[in-house]
Amino acid sequence: MLDFIEENNRIVQFPFAQYRRFMPFGYSHLLLSAIIKKAKLDLFHAPTAWRPLAYNGPTVVTAHDMAIYEHPEWFPKKQGFSKRVVVPQTIKTAKHIIAVSEETSRAVRTLFAVPPQKVSVIYEGAPEVPAVSAQQMQDVRDKFDIGKRFILFVGTLEPRKNVARLVRAFDELVERDSKEFMDVELVLAGGQGWNDDEIKAALRAAKSRARIKAVGYVSEDEKWALLRGAQVFAFPTLYEGFGLGNLEAMAAGTPVVTSRLPIMREVLDKAAYLVEPTSVHDIALGLEALLRSESLRRDYAARGREQARQYSWRTCAEQTLAVYQSIYKQGLREKGSQVIKGGLTGRSISGGEKR
Image 1 (cartoon, rainbow, N blue to C red):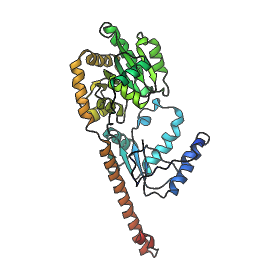
Image 2: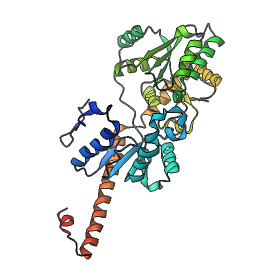
Image 3: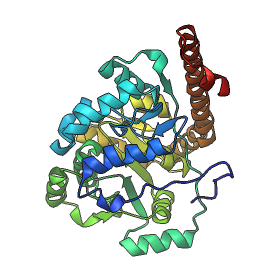
Image 4: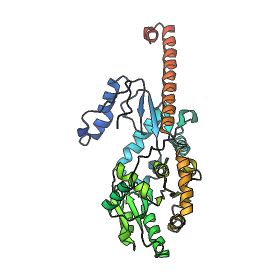
């Protein structure tokens, strides 16, 4: 996991993490601020739109999505403080914001009146797909009692992932042609999320319930075995900031059925079979089209592999480093300006000269 570390990098773990549950505000905003300040960083990168409130050092923030503002009904009310205070303050005080897509950049700029020059779009990368043997795929299917033909969903079982409609679409698919799809299963891989009542209700009501396998959270190795073995990857999400799961499936060579949303057109172009996510019927038609046609599956698998190659974690890292360097140089210029002003008013400039 840590074999990428070079000599000029080191990992610092925040201490006393076990106390966070007892004093969440004190730990997250006071103690962590003190720890970060003690490190005397030139730049702090918050990998989400969240920074300890008491920390005021130069910060770069990565914004993955703005779903909590655009669809607050998908989130528990206990996140209200972060929504009202922490995220807006983090965005406002950040030196620069990295958005994982043009769609996320648009949302950040619109919601918080952020000037365009303060936001850079840096795409995430497609993963390197590990080798998976036929025996490994068989072992995972045996573990979860899955047959050879299956549709795979990977993600948290929560409202925004649209799992309830996927379940109903699978029911419709099976009812439409029970002979053709009699051996097809739907595999839901992912932990339970907040407010999954509708998903549970859809599963209880499903006529094909015996062929729907909710296997829960799976390991990385199990995930890749399932991705490589699935005939179709189904991801009819209602909202994404980037949609990394689709790229994982594409990199694995699995054809993707996903949502007809601006973010999917931006990231996936024409490499996925797009469906209307609010239509159970349209989702079912998309699944049917790929399951019926081996040539169509091969076509979308090839398109997906090619599209996944467009996204590199190395490129992501290089572009992120360029942001660091730009903000650091900007800070030096600002300090130099303060030193000059200080000199003109008789204040010491030795700190600036030493720098």
